[in-house]
Length: 272
Length: 272
Image (cartoon, rainbow over all chains, first blue to last red; front, side, top):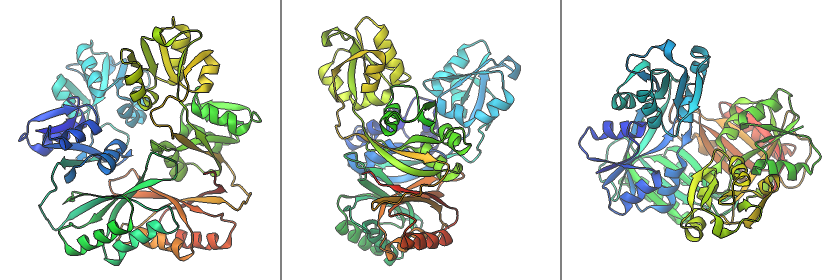
């Protein structure tokens, strides 16, 4: 059983279908924390969770739940290329369109195209891309929506303009989350950890020096608030390599001993 | 003329009023990028812009506009303690409440209290805290809302439960943005810069080493996507000290020469 962020027809749904290749039963969740906690409690085996978008950045709810709350591991990642499409009721034409609806985010991502090609259409925010697709399917052809290819299939809509976002390089990185860590080792793995530091000069530099001294390449670093006061952070770092490798293991052990809170989030195959 | 994120009655409005002490005329904007661009173009002198919340983390739209788009400087900061309140129509009592409405974020921040003390009330999302306050003022006393003290004053509401959020330590850091950099120097200043790095092992470590070698304390580091592809980031770093100080000036000059894109965002008095 694989959890994904519903409803049906979202890019998370598409990622779940593509990653599993139809080999898993899917179950919808309404938030990232709920889905990750369902893996933690054993309600589902795995979940595929969005963690980073190339335009919007990190998905904070995912990062915070993995770093601070749930006792689960990242066991893999999957990169989905995000292609927004202008969808209409079957048979409708561009000149029929009076209203264009979607979730505010995809509307924003297509705003230049919409302004140039549909200057007279009214843009209306919807609660979700699925709600927008449903309204388009039930309308008289004057309502169009922005949505995924999966959404077009599910609601029987025509794709009037494929890949119509202003910015063409849009992709989302998902992580696969399981209760137990992955034992698989490849030659292009990545390891994620989270840690806090004492609030003293040079603390982060000293932690990163442990990686540099072991010739370990850092792929990503980010900070998230610890939620108790301004200026206190937890760092989430991705490095190249698998904890199965002795040099990685010993470097991480030094990091663990020199930091405050420390959490190993998993070693898994790197996809980008 | 001081720009702030409207509508009236929001915490941004409260920050603008408190910071300016009534000495500036205020102008509302509907987004952070629009407000920062208005400073850049000279439409307004200054803006007070939310940049970080102690629970939610960074305000990405602010960071991205300052780091990549607008030609303006941070000249100061202001910390606002965020206190949510349960507001009712004048004279209404707790037992009258059937519906509690607000923007989803304040509703979320009070969710434990609402579940415990108002288990039978229906929670309804509103487009803004102002829309929720307006509905409360116009209702028959059965609608309550979550909002700021400023909102209670503006809409003539009673504060039924002051400071009612689940998490009491909630504050937002605002920055003051102007077209020209601040010339004021104090003994507790902060300097913000943004830079990109070559995608090679140890690049970030080498950049941070320049600060460590000059005994400069880093207060904050964060990464934001460069928006063209996954895995490319711009780093935003806050350090202690003013660029007016020679050791800071020379260290930043080394950072500038060793990084790709580099932008000095300003030196200003540190408030927390």
